[in-house]
Length: 281
Ligand code: AMP
Image (cartoon, rainbow, N blue to C red; front, side, top):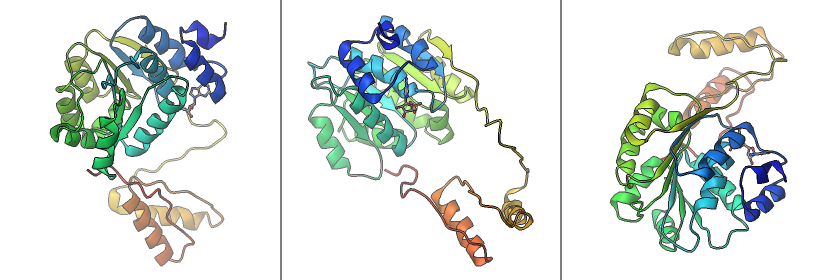
């Protein structure tokens, strides 16, 4: 028996796992999958991106979905469209040997008509960003009143981005008797409020040590006020003339602004960003 088999996964999922080249379950998978398969329980999992958490909720979700029904049974909320597409893509790979399971992504900045059409064809699993989801609910384009499973992925990130109200609105459209699985890297107050308000005696798991940097890399940081940030960056560049560096910014606009200023000031710089900005509906 493989380690994945021991977790209780059925053959079709095991075949997909082997196609994906996964050899053994990650820690979050080992902890979450048996709990989620065994009973219909709520779950709070403290786990970061990169820990294999998508499969930790994705495998049990796919296994539990009734593929004979076209009703939407599972809803996954995620903070950004990139993550939404990534989850959808992963779930489609995991369910490649399941007959008739349809996973549809709903996110802002793309045609709502096309997304509505996909939902209408029958999507048992919907992966959505909160803004677009709320919009589609209010226009009657998606029905989540019969879901059995709701996953809140990167809950802390969703709340950081100001989706508290939207999440509450969306959850209030779901039935009371469902399982809610909340994944978050951290547990700030707002996440605890959501857990308390919408979950029933959730089981809890924590995965691994958080946020360790590579030990071979020296880390330094400087606390500067917003308006000193750019001069500080320039000073760092000037004191390290041979430096090759990557400057991470929060938004696409910031990356453009920083790159433009650096170029103006005679540095060899360029902006790099996906053309996907934060969700807009
Ligand atoms: P996630 O934390 O869900 O974003 O997953 C991070 C990456 O790990 C994804 O590319 C997954 O395809 C991959 N992954 C998930 N589970 C496993 C596993 N058990 N073995 C190897 N890779 C995995």
